[in-house]
Length: 435
Ligand SMILES: Cc1ncc(COP(=O)(O)O)c(C=O)c1O
Image (tube, rainbow, N blue to C red; front, side, top):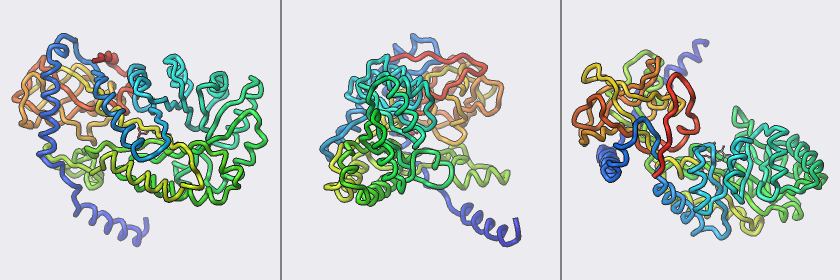
């Protein structure tokens, strides 16, 4: 780095260090903790008769979330389709429950597709980059239920060859790149290539191009989705009428952040990341932060307005959704127990964070509740897993009167990107108990 760049970086660092991310209001935190203590009380007998650790799948919560999501969008848009993003929680009972709520499944690999077929899902979209010959073959063999959301011109060619070999016609859409620069450009084709893609598809008699797809991630507000909806509107006006008429559906992906917002530890905030890099303390374990999100109804209202404004007339088609996190986050909880107590400030649990497959709790704040000694008092204590790594952290505080060996702990709302990221590492994987 030259002097000029260092001066610029220091100014940025100064402004970052002097700001503070918004705190998590203590009333909100307490209400959440109370809600899950109450919930655990209701299910106490069942929880205590099982041997921890386990994942607890709450199918009632899952159904409620699914219904809320569906009604938010179907009350403001005429023609809608809902597909659960299996990658966010790949347990078959999650998919089975959502199929029962009228959802289809959004799969991103052959393994997920096999599961969807085994569950007899009637509406499956298969998206994702780099689909293999074997995966596309499985899709073509199941052309009555699978729509392939193609990721590239090459994939169109491959799918055409496979479908022609099988003598079938398969429905398809094409994914559009939302960020043409950086790592996100790996997904889909550029919007400016859409006409060319339609022309290429005209020569493919076994692939019926019927729709478009895009996905933006981590949306705390509908801004990114609205921005891309506008871009699609502009691109559509450049398509021939024949091609526009081919568009039966536009799948606008998932990426909805739950209303509760993103709860972070001090280390997880932008200023905390910098402090850590500078070798500084990240502050009290009892300080938590929250980046706000929006109710799903706000997303639905703004997205539908953007669709009416930018597509109505031009693209009178079905709008499809692929939510993952929003639907399954609150439907699975982790139940652990304390195996060892090395002091009032450090306990070790039976499970390790291989249960969720990543070092989530160093940066995400997910309250640990002591079900055996419930209290709204938050106490400082390292709650650590039993893996041979110091990064096996569940939390640095807990809610409870005390904490002792054999106590049952719950970490609520661990349904998204945890179960499906679990890994065989040192400790066995917990069972899933369904209620
Ligand atoms: C194409 C696609 N659709 C849907 C999702 C689900 O996103 P979320 O779980 O954030 O709703 C993802 C997540 O990566 C995705 O890549």
